[in-house]
Image (tube, rainbow, N blue to C red; front, side, top):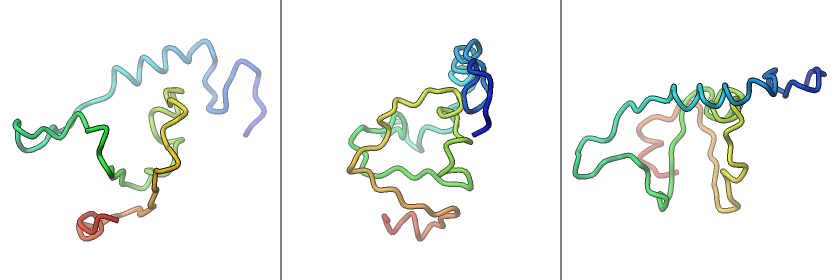
Length: 99
């Protein structure tokens, strides 16, 4: 990490701007799709969901994810029971396999 003035965090956001960064993230989130059927909506996700697929080239890089940049992580996002499998470009077979 680069040594910065004490008023800046590791991402270069000044402490006086952290609240604005959080507000910007909250207001910029967009719901893209809520399932195929209104009888069985996809969102919100069940807290009992056994698995959630996060895919893409930045899926395992918190620096590219909104919560890390705005400091919104709860700090307990993963538990000891959480299994993380890294696969940058999962195909349909990978998803259907339930890995």
